[in-house]
Length: 438
Ligand code: AAL
Image (cartoon, rainbow, N blue to C red):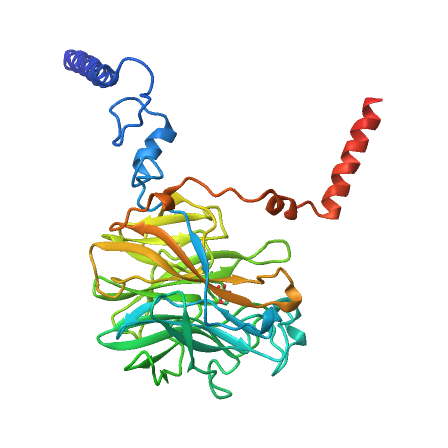
């Protein structure tokens, strides 16, 4: 018996020595192969070099579609153009247009839908919702209807009027219908939108479910389905109060509807915005919420487009990964694919293949977005629509859109100055330091 054990021990020691010599050999082999003489090459290899790399260089090749911003198809600059065709009463806050839908091209024209508010006075603000009433709006998107406009070139638009009006009291959406997006499915048109039955802010937050209306033509008439299709989450869940920015795309023969929710607000914590996904076989539901929700940890309004076999998404001004363009090969698990600047708010892109169930998304080059409080005067709070152009397309290569960064004017930085309290705190600290050094 002891003999057997000794033999086993010898075999074991021999085997582990062999192993370590192997792995060493492999590592030695690896570094030998990679032991490219000298430092990292001056000309940045377009493909990942076979040499030891730092985490940052590993990431530069693994996390991005190109090692340079120029060759990263999901990196772009954004360029903005003022639209023709919309009047805002000299920006006095009584007319607002915001949260545009995706754009579709039908019968030789571009169509878009958006939130339209025309009220006697400017909004009092979500935090002053108690001052709102049947004619005074709380938020900029309160007391609103869904309007639509058409265009031949995407720069000059003709406002066509109301598409989906507020519902009759007490029906869902009788207070305000907003933040809509379009789906084209089996030749019919569907508009999903936020349906408010209480002034935003009056029931503790910007709380609403999502409803839908349908039509045989983009010019309507639109028939309201009359009940919510993306309900709020169960009590205690992240999306229990708000389902915002419904954004349907066709994938895998189904409707993938992405949405935002505002949550985690408390006495001491600010709102968090994250995105979820709900999937259905039929535009009128039932929609099944994805068990991994939230599926994006950053962003505000939803903007997505099919890209290659996956989907790309904008993560604008909220969250640890804000100001990024993200990519999910499986349409669920997103990674940062580019860091960008001056992203369009509430962007509604023109996406030719968004309803084609494509397995090879070609990307986007333009769309319509909004800009809130354009004059910086909250007493005249409203939003305006504007056009954005970019190069997030596999079929366009515009070097001007791949420039590394925009240079803001110094006034922009000075306008973003310290508050009186912040300056007083610094002055007090400086004084203490001086006192101390005497
Ligand atoms: C927007 C969107 C939703 C919110 C409000 C109006 O930016 O996220 O629509 O409810 O703000």
